[in-house]
Image 1 (cartoon, rainbow, N blue to C red):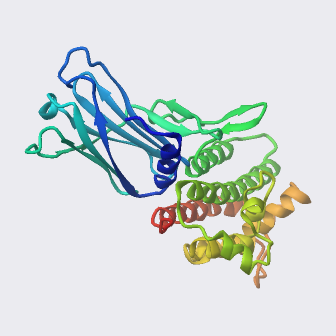
Image 2 (cartoon, rainbow, N blue to C red):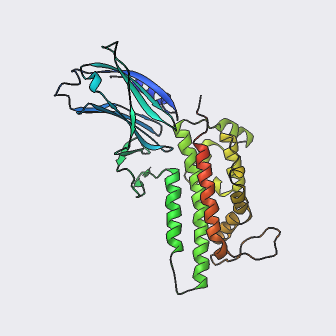
Length: 334
């Protein structure tokens, strides 16, 4: 299947969406049953942060891989045995957040039936780096996928993977002990709180970048208009931007870009973020690493960070889980 550069660019833009389908013909020089046909890449396309790969194997299997930050790498497989005498195939690729499939028909056998794929367990994970390159790794790897060169970050973990790694780091930190006693407990809890807020901030920024690159409908024009230019795509995604350290900014950005009201996703978590956690993080980072008492709201009792950190961790995990699930059902761009 030979495409011109213009056709490739058009296809890349058309396939940069969370759900869709594409059809095309596959032309082979020989019948698929010919013993000299040893397989290889039939079709691949990088569309934003989506990667599509159709690969033929010598055992007459055709595999369709799709990778995106939202769904990871998925696989669908079809058996070409019933069309092994064909040289021209019609292929339909279908993908969405909830399914991956493809269908094949032999154009030189008009009476033949369509072959339907079945789902399979992927044997490889794919990810698109910052330069549009394809990075392959073993599935289920627990190691952080991060690559830094002299030009900066080339490959990084997805938003949800980065959040999960952050939670793991906090769990490791909270298991540590010291002869310093209570003083250590305060510092330990304080920096766990800082890590929680940093993780929430990083997830929000990175997830919006992913959604934009996957073709979801983010209304940057509306956001820029209602904020009088305070929030733009360039400003929000700038490497040094820290808009999501502010809950008010977080709420406004999500509302106008996606329609989501993040404060209503988990009211308990939002209240604790606003009343205590984010304020405490600011004090720890900018003023006092040994601060033990939390900012209060109409409450005479003193609360200590050491008694609250596990609860902060719980509601933070629940909040990010619910937010991430909401992002998987956002409308795609028109």
